Image (cartoon, rainbow, N blue to C red; front, side):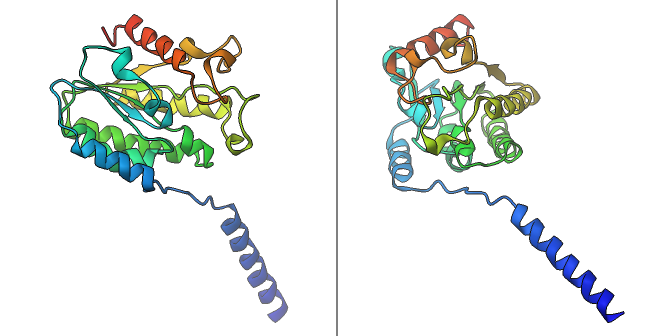
Length: 227
């Protein structure tokens, strides 16, 4: 009897250990020096009437949106390296002006960290809830996570594949529809026939060359999201 009891104790302990090993550790950090400096700058800038806000990570931050859309109250709220947790933490600053439009693009840095698609989608949903509650009249455009060029990516982005990007975009599209927001697939503006980010559009398989933003904005205009 003692022998059998010891066996079951060992089995239970082993099972518990296996479950612990399978548990995904989530890196939800975002509050680094660049994040804080950018956020301080955002908070010091005066609000404009009928703002058009681009929210996201380095891909958004690198966009020359004011030059691309001259004469419009365009605001760049991109922070390099940001993840959905960081966007959630600072979205109040974006919403404080009750902007006319928000174009949001986020998620690729979460994928880089290996955060599961389901977890990313749940955090993104919390962002959309805040938008709906705090600024219900704002038109929100949920932009697709851009495809990557898998042959050009550095090793640190090995977890970012177009397959998992596709899975995340399906979740984001469903969330946009759930909240009555507009889903915008950016891929047709920058991808090749195989769904890869065109080499001519990218520096490193992920980030865009400046000219690619012209194509991006042209797509938004063609769809009637911008004039």
